[in-house]
Length: 344
Image (cartoon, rainbow, N blue to C red; front, side, top):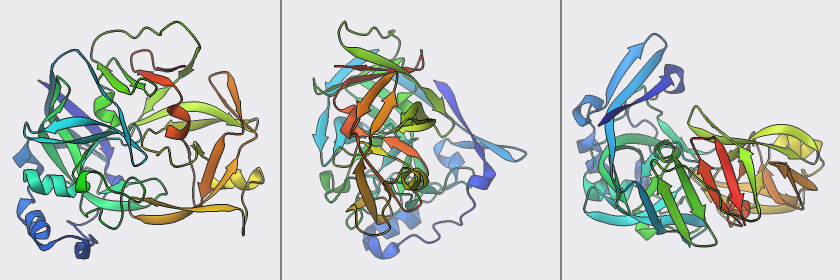
């Protein structure tokens, strides 16, 4: 079993234990669970090693079972998911989200499994969603997270410290009565490659095998796994750029394909102080208003696309490419070669 390490700036955090959590949103039994389950990180196998202004978070983790698995790829509520088994007992939807840096276990699932919750200052204290809003979070280790016949052991998971009855992750509905897992980029990046076969409705995880593209219409885009971690590519919008863009399978297919920064939308003449095509969007931490429009051109991997649907919102600062675009392809993230292959 290998030890995983996360290097974090201590300035990222600093919130007090459970400060600001909206306890009014949490049923009494779950509130009491949270109070009773708070533990020191060492009690669940997480070690925090301080090195000056930085801290290393270290824990043992492993992968067992098949070296390659093929599992169903479901589309529900705008999200993409596959069935997973948590701690050997709970079968729940696993939302596959390249925009989530780490795995996430919903509060209700954590309550059902009696997961111990820790909040070391060296781990982020908030989970951020599309739109820039956030919810406070704790952390736990899942004894096992099984996807098909592949099992991740001691999988690190965030636990948002509020329920999603009023504010949901995936639009205006919930998934499985808010008992679900999000499979984040940190564990996905341990693979040789992962394939989102949207046309074939299946998800592939390969631990060791090299990726070989099928013959036919395809294009390849260089990518990077940046600290966070985040999955990034380079794009151009209306001839401007290049810009760094996050690939986010958690940006639902009910949303426009690309989010662009508000400032760029103003420069390109898409932003309207009043009027325009506006829509309310729901995410972690609350609802917010977006403006929607069609870009003249969008460029990625040497390919140019016209009239791509896009949006922005107050305070938007990054480019995010979501499922509305990605689900047209058989998309493979090749972590070894640091490329993303899009096949028709």
